[in-house]
Length: 156
Image (tube, rainbow, N blue to C red; front, side):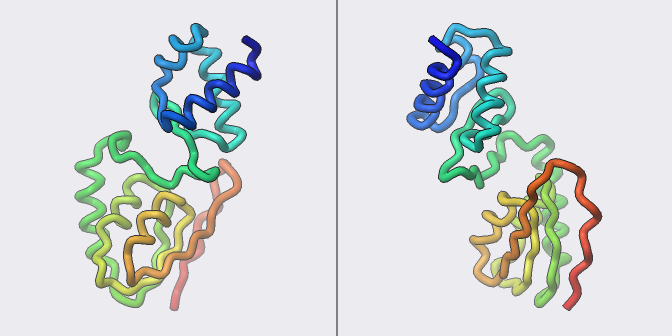
């Protein structure tokens, strides 16, 4: 089987299963871990999958907008921080919620009654905020993995 055929078959398998363990892929195709890593990097660079802690996850419509909470380290502590920080958000504020698993918890714990404008560069946070009826979300996105300039403070 050629590299191209294997990658095509791997992608077809992911379309069926949605998530695959790296060890399963290695055994299924009888290839080395390095080969699996290279195949997954190729698929990720083509925006077909997301690689995450020993597994490959199929992107739906070119985007994987759900963050699996089981992969977040120190989740209990981050939830406590998120609950506390969410209480500090006042009605009619504009807030920047920068990408991160701790800030994701802030978005999760915003009260449904709070009326704010939230600006974020995280698809995960934007997805979380769409469930809040009184939050206007502005998604600014990102096109680079380089460290961004410090964010500009928004004022009303």
